[in-house]
Image (cartoon, rainbow, N blue to C red; front, side, top):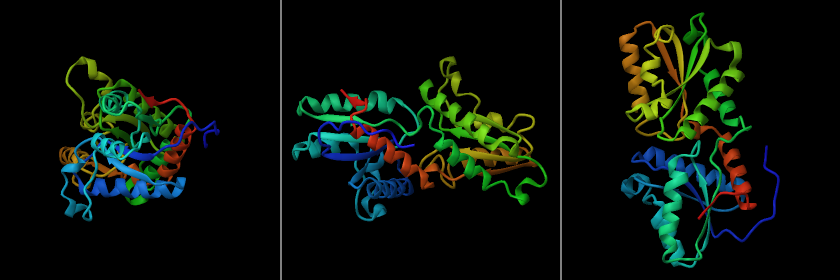
Length: 291
C-alpha cells in the first residue's frame, strides 16, 4: 500500500538507486534495468550507483558506460552544484551499509560541502509489508510442478546471504514466516537459512546455513525449493554462483534429493512498486536522512 503523502521538504537534486555493488556485468546490467523502470514509475530520473566494487568492471562489458561508486558519484555532482540527494537502497533490510557506511561517506563529503543533504529511504522490507514474501511465495509456486514433486510436498529453504547485523537476519526470518503463511499446506515446511556466516558465537543468529539444512533428515531427500532472497544475479545467486554450488554438493551427497532454485528477486516487476513507495515516503520528508 502506498504511503500517505506528507509535506515535501526541499527539492531533490538527484535520486540514486544504490546497491552493494558487484563484479558481475549481469548484476550491473540488471541494476540499471531496475533504475530505468523505477524512473518511469516515479516520473523522474533515478540513477544506478553502487557502494563498492562495480566500477572495476570494464566499460566494454557494460555497453560502453562504467558503473559508478557512491562516494565519487556524490562528490562529482556536488562539485557541479548539487546539494540535495535521495538514496533509494536496493537492500532488503537495514544492513551496515545503510546504518554505517553511507552516513560515514556523507560525513566525509560534508568537510568540503557543508550544505550537502543525503536523505536515505527505507530498505525494501519493512514491518507490515508482505509484498516481498508474496513475490517469494509466487516464485516458489512456479517450481511446484508435478514433474518436480513426484507426488510429494516440497520443503522450502528461504536463503539470504548471511549478515553480521542481526537486524538483517530478522528481516530474513520475517519474510520466511510470511512465506510460510502464504504457502500454507501447499508445501511441507518452510525454513530460513543463510548462505554463509562469520565465525564465532556472536554470529550464531545466521544459523542454519543452507548447506547444513540440506544435510538434515527430511531435507536431504525429496523435493526442496531454494527461495533466493537475493536481488541481483552474480557470484552468489547467478546460474553458476555459490548457491548453485551448495545445492550441487548436496545433490551429489544425497541422490534422492531434488532441488529447484527461484530466480533473483530483482527480476520480479513488483519490486519496482515497492521501490516507488520508498521514494515517495522519503521525498515526503519521512525520517532517514544521513547526518
